[in-house]
Image 1 (cartoon, rainbow, N blue to C red):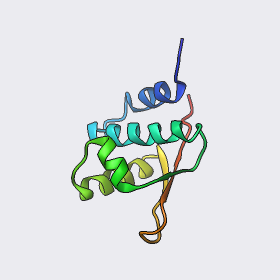
Image 2: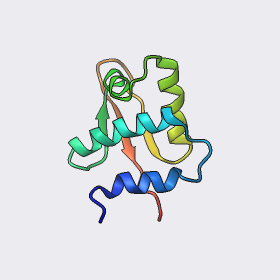
Image 3: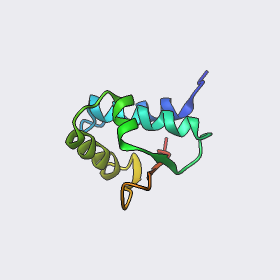
Image 4: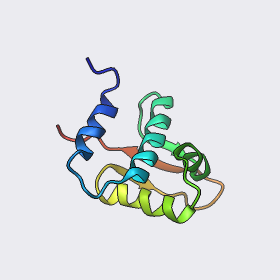
Amino acid sequence: MEYFPPLTDFYRAIADDPRIGSTHISIYMALLHQWNLNGGHNPVKIERSCIMKAAKINARQTYNKCINELQDYGYIRYEPAPNGSVNSRVFLIEREK
């Protein structure tokens, strides 16, 4: 029995994806947590500092690289904030099974 299908779906999707590393997984888990707190609805408004803290990432460059790669690889759609007074938005993409 699956208790949280989005988590299972993500791990199925990355099982054979050699591009995904532990930092990608850590960021995705932090995003998935925010999505869950948002009632499972897209988009999720995020603050970089909060996602970095939850993902245990200290380097902004690493965060930017990995979140952009998650978008390039089709796991999320990332809409960066135009300025510091607005939150970025992330859409978690449902993967085909």
